Length: 125
Image 1 (spheres, one colour):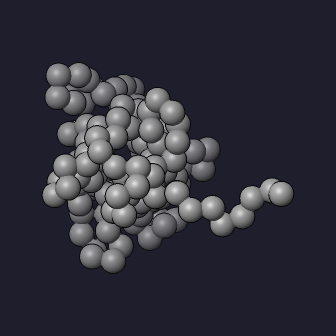
Image 2 (tube, rainbow, N blue to C red):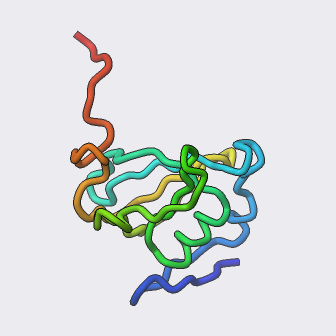
């Protein structure tokens, strides 16, 4: 069954059967969320969502996460203006990880870089 959630002037269609398959128990109430630029597919950041954060994301169309350090929900860009408009949500085969494909406004990283993955740890010679 597909449920439509209003996203501003557009509608996000949510597969309610897949929504039930998300395994929040495995991660003690949280699932990792890989965030990718909708157009370039560049990985922007990785964050965590609990059920409430996911529900707020699906309802508003803007990325919400759960801060493990602050132990609270937060909307990406609420204070900085660097929001993430969610255009598509993918779920992995195990139901324990999500991908948000987003339209990033401004930068994704708190350091001022577009992506949080701007440092190279290792590469082939």
